[in-house]
Length: 297
Ligand code: SF4
Image (cartoon, rainbow, N blue to C red; front, side, top):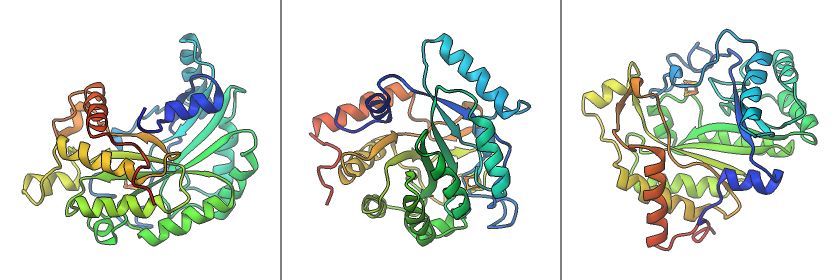
């Protein structure tokens, strides 16, 4: 394999397949309710996240674990994915995490959030669990360019992200960074600059996404008005492949392309499937003899 996938990492670390268990704890986002901004990031429609509404945290986890164990999978990662999973009081956060650790076969916790709503107290709490569970903080960054972050209404700066990366590391936790390739106003050079910049930070994993245009988002109107063009699948493959060459070879590539529910998706019309995309991407890496880390410095 020419790059270091999450599956490979988990197999090496835990000796067997580990599956994610998505948990929806019903939190919201400070970029929607006015604390950091109103209306959210221009591309965001949280209904495209996985919701397991109506069930308690314990029910969500035990139901999913039951299904996975019937399929022969016996190790699990809790994935707090929807909205900003540290956007609550410290006490609420402690309760939420503690009540989710209901099964000895849970080996890790991944917490998706924004870099500007992570208190030292929460990081300290997680660091105390770090001996028993592998903990990844997943920070949405999307771009290192403040101009782009303003345009997409992220409500935080690149500098705030960097500060949170170093604070997180000081508690011994692992970090996944989310990036979007193909944001409005960004060319190939800008995207490479973002990857180059994060490659010099103490991060452990990256999730790459392509830009989706979802129904009822602010970006939908910009797109329909022709304010920008979407990156093509070929351009995305080249940009992604070149991005991997800039990342250290032990940085885990946790995601190569985004996905969105068909009923919400306006554009683009690629990939036709994840499998098809991965075949095309792997062929591109191979035919151009590219490897993760080959241009890292
Ligand atoms: S920070 Fe995340 S949940 Fe909040 S508006 Fe942006 S994409 Fe949506």
